[in-house]
Length: 328
Ligand code: PLP
Image 1 (cartoon, protein in one colour):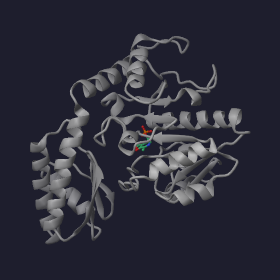
Image 2 (tube, helix red, strand yellow; image 1 turned 60 degrees about the vertical axis):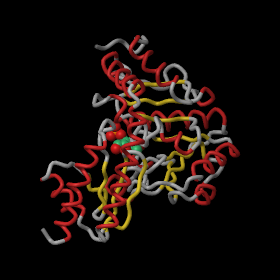
Image 3 (cartoon, rainbow, N blue to C red; image 1 turned 180 degrees about the vertical axis):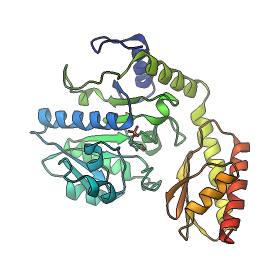
Image 4 (tube, helix red, strand yellow; image 1 turned 120 degrees about the horizontal axis):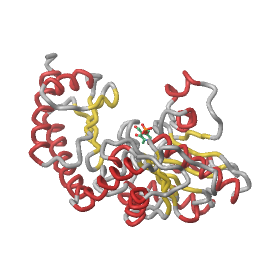
């Protein structure tokens, strides 16, 4: 189940190989969770800064982002409510307005080594950026010689109807992080990097359980299943079907102000703070939704659902909205 950190194992290598073959990244470090992958990503960017950018160490992140619960990732996450209870926070993270290239430009200095984004902010509200925003950020990174880190912990592994979110926006990151769906329920995270950003040398980074044969085998089996069974295509197709159904519900229920998202990462915004009541009503009828905000729910169903399950979900949500709107 566990080997010394000094050895590669076959399951670890098979997973790394499959990830490299199916992404634009060249190197993989396997760890145990999302925040660990993000910590590794920031360490890697700082190492890049120390080697190539005169010691630049700052990472620009966005307001409403979520990158994990370690102290550094708490600072990276652009949410004051996450910061205040744990101050003072580690330095080196600059939170700027989301989906705002001018804010990114204004925050970039000779201390900046990377920009770190979720392709679509997930916990922060399923905030879909403008179609060309990531391209503009990519261009800005290139023209300043700094790295683009994409946190694909929630958006990766087919969730948006593409294997990775970067494919949806036509950009390639220098560093990418994965976790959540990667292990199909088994705890695992991965840090991927392009060759030019793979600047760790022996001793810079490691994790005792990272890349152990058991979790690596689980993630390999998950990714192989996702690829062999066109789960990504399914997420795209059913996601569109669910989105159309939610838009139809919007036409029927005036309390829905917006439906947004991509693939099977969707949000329904409401004109009053009744998300909790809608959630409880749905739960009572067999549908799990998530309270994204007091006035918004999130739907993040398994990527294997079909149109039948989408119809069932839409019907339960339809009744829940009618019932809650009537005070039921
Ligand atoms: N990054 C994103 C975008 C996430 O959604 C999450 C978890 O919700 C994390 C990082 C943290 O991952 P973990 O909970 O595995 O540490």
